[in-house]
Length: 332
Ligand SMILES: [Mn+2]
Image (cartoon, rainbow, N blue to C red; front, side, top):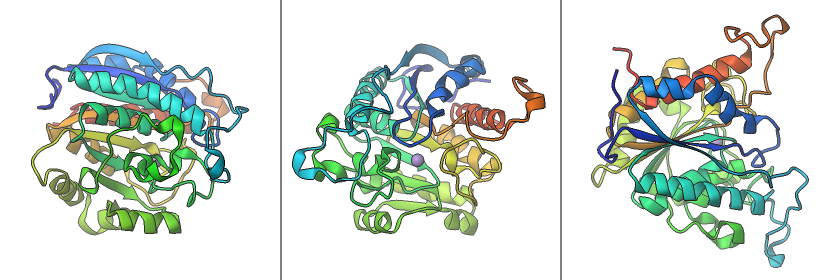
């Protein structure tokens, strides 16, 4: 089996970046996913597909603490509903240094979250190297909230309002390293089924392309991805980044995640998206986020058994499989 090199990469070289960040949401455990994915054979799996693993890097998160003071909002904006902006802005800035460098050397960039706030760093950094980047955002949620629309203040529900430049109006200093932003023709959302009311108005006014579960039901995932590609390649092919939130998948198949919504992608639909990105010949990076190995039912009888079917193991396994599909694994 050989890798599917993208025309925007000059080799089958891949860098892995661990981003064990949990402060973008409220549940501990999501920060443990990168290590668990690596422990469960990620590198061997990637190499078996023909990729050479270059660097394995880790964002330093020792300053990220749940009891951190939540400062860094300019005084006249106190009252905005946003948690840990300073801590997450700095972690994303450090992550962006890695993803920018990896994109500049034309290696594939694989970022392991952590919660979805890390995409501000991975994509924000990739955009510094490739301003024309196209993004396929696979998610149950819109991820377009702002400090004014967010019910929770959790940044993992806001990454797209940062990456689209909408956040600039709040001038949050710890995110001032973000320089290049996505325009509507650079972004498609797939698998969406939960959007907050004000978030919806914001998304409509910005003009984001949304393929919700309704479109997947109506047209099938194959046609949805063709339409997504048409939008992203409207003015010629561009390098693509796949940002995969595991909560896009129906909780039946990927139960260990923090913000579950029923009615999601089934097992094959989840894979087809990753396979489609691989065969596009344009994929240069991927995020896999929101696997929380501490959530879910563990059968005590199979605890610590690699072959067990505990919810954690099932979710980690589907995460590893999605990475393989995005990196060129084929059924036939
Ligand atoms: Mn998300």
